[in-house]
Image 1: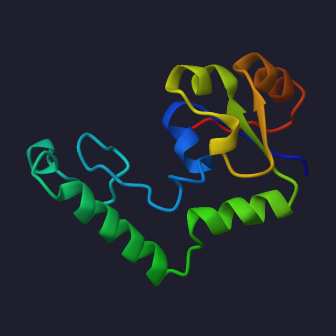
Image 2: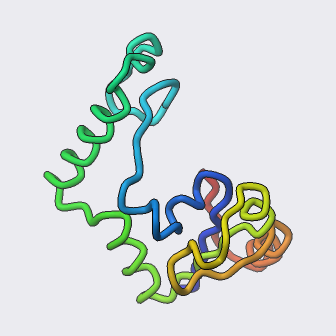
Length: 123
């Protein structure tokens, strides 16, 4: 089955070879936190580091591959990784900043791809 993933704004950090080894999990206002964290706690110094360590420990305990390993597996499986060109321009990201094998395109290009797809997931 053909698959593509469109990366925009901070999602570009996942494709950025200088950042994707050290992504952070900010707890402040993050509805994805597995344990509800009141916003007041999320603003305390060190909470991002603590949340990141906690998430990394959970993933490691379940033998979940790292982001880099998941990207490698996706590329080996033929998944198209598409970086939003407009967002790259806005955020000052250059093609050289990204991992090998990433396509550049805009939202219109991805929507054209998605319109011809049988399954689309938007999260």
